[in-house]
Image (cartoon, one colour):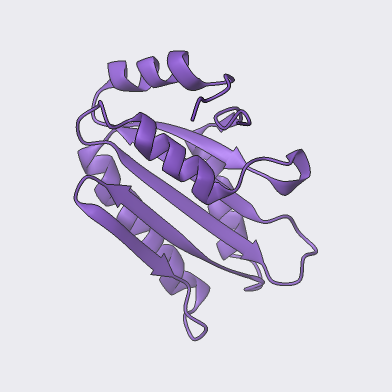
Length: 147
């Protein structure tokens, strides 16, 4: 299996990427997916939804997650590096974190409609405790993940 957890970006960088994409001309659509012990929730960018509305809903979900899990690792997924699909990375993160209490995994995909700009695909792995985040990074970042 490919290395799944290799491109970490900072929270400020991630939020700036999101802000820039959603404040642009509306050339994106996409979805946000949240997976936790309680289940899965998906927010799709509906055709009639304005960028501001989608951004407000994304912001609210990320704030709610921050209230529960304050220790994040954010991975950027890109086609030009031939990274694994975002859902593959998300599923692996969720499976590998089952030993930690209360982990939330969020996938945000902002897909450029015209293909002129790169898509933005971010995977947030959110932990309740800092030692959980550190342990995850030591065990899985930059390493082949066994099936």
